[in-house]
Image: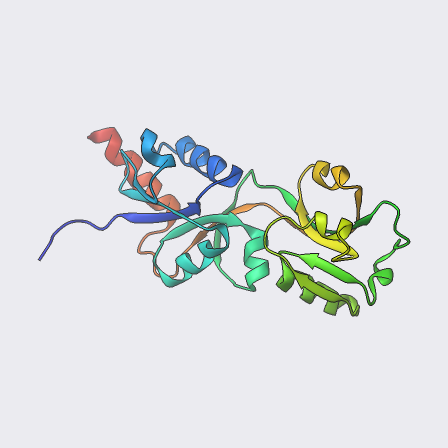
Length: 212
């Protein structure tokens, strides 16, 4: 029987700004990764008993819930979209964004009541559907994977529901926010199967590094 100690696993986004911020955050806690961290799906930390698991952003909560990963860093909006509860260890100082409904600058839609009967394209149908129900609005939800900004110009939708940070992408497509569904930022979540709280793990690894 192997006596090898199991590595703790942290699931993060496989690519994109949130991945970069997550690695930078772990670095601020003392974790060190080699240059291959950007190329491997499972990358061991050089000085902690921890491995980074790179997965699709929307899959992170499922990895954590199942115990396939002990911890995860994801946007709070992902938990909302999946309608999943998770143990949030802490909110993190990055990944700030808003999920908004946006309409064309030339649109006659001025209030959320004007969305009644309209078509709304989104990559976040779960969040949008619950919000519309709460508002008592009946609208057609058009699920779209990826960028949705062009759907209005192509007459596939009358409005969109999408994440925005600076608003520049919306402006580039002549769209303006009509309503904010939720505000989000990155959160660190922990699996119910994790054998050690996240910051306890970090402290134990730092102490080990000090005496090694």
